[in-house]
Amino acid sequence: MAQGYLLYEIERLVARLGSNDTGMSSTVSNLEHIIGEIQQESENFKVSLSNAVFRLRKEKQVCLLIEKYHRAMVLLIDEFLEQEEALSREDFFVRIHKILNDMLLFIEKRFSAYLNPESELPAHYVSLSQKQWKSRLKEMESSYREAGAEKLYGFVRENIMRFIHAKRHRHLPLRALLYRKELITEMEGLSKSVKMGQMPKALHELLIYMNYNSLGYLEYYTRELTGFAGTLETTGEQAAFLSKKYRKFKRLYCNTHIALHHGKENIKGMISGWFESQLSLISEGKISTALPYGKAYKGLAPPNLKVLPKIVCTFSATQLAILLRAADQAQLVRAPSLSAVFKAVVPHLSSLRTSDLSPDSIRSKSYLFDEKDRESTIDLLQQLIKKIRDL
Image (cartoon, rainbow, N blue to C red; front, side, top):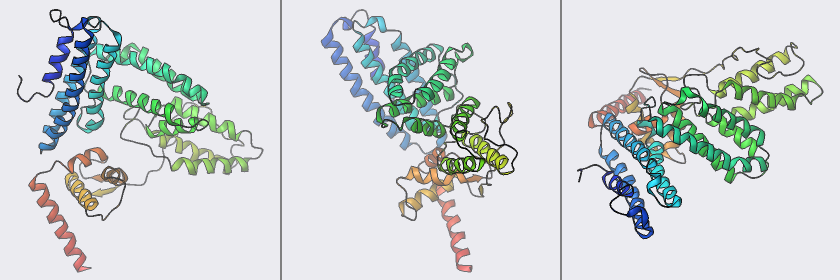
């Protein structure tokens, strides 16, 4: 047995499925037994991997470990998918594939901060993933149609399908694949949980949360708003309508650590720029009715939202992580979870090294620090205590 390799047993069981000399693929009882073993080993793997991560003290070691098992899972699924003909029944194939895919999703969701977003995936795996996207999108189509969100759903589906069929995307970076996988998963969740009549609003909120920062969506969103505004009789009524919508819009959360188009302006900034521009033009009397993006900007990028400068921390990101975790445990701050603390605070801060700090990365540092980091944080607090005494 390969000492310390957490996927050894699962790889052995999957290899038996494709074996020609064991007869496993022809015996239902044997297949049921193997599926049971694979399910049990998958649960053992999740626990073992989590324990292995928490035993490591350095972030680089954790990154290497997670990337190792992510690559191994991708290759394992890739190899399993090539064995489809070896299984006598399709339902067994689907069940095993779901178990393996759940293991991969566990790594991608639980340890996403440690994965290299630019790493490329095998072309065969990407192709089969995109094939699954088509099937999943088709399955939820009726739910969105019945809930009155067929038009917006169709817009998103069309964009995903266009991406799938683009030949240049045969070799996807992990970042692009994970974004679309998460988007489709979230859309599936909406299709099953949102009440009738609330679906269009919920889907818009999801796209903004997911930072769906495409100019096409900006045009769709603004055309929808101006369509409503255009039914009002006076510019004053239009301005009041847009102001109310803008106030509600500003309360929505946009996860700027992910994006449809990496490196581009976030969707909340794009839409906010449109709102501010239209309200300004209406108040100055330069336009009599609000214009959607496209007509309003004639293909130019919308004005940037004025963002307040972040607070610069002169101490390290690891020290910040320790301070926030300690404050949470001492109940000096209150939030639904420790993760919520990091998500609420970190986006407003920067360090001397980087202007964009990731809440997930800072949270991971709060568990992965050495004695030197602990002592330097204590020294930092001693300095603060001295200043308080001198006030």
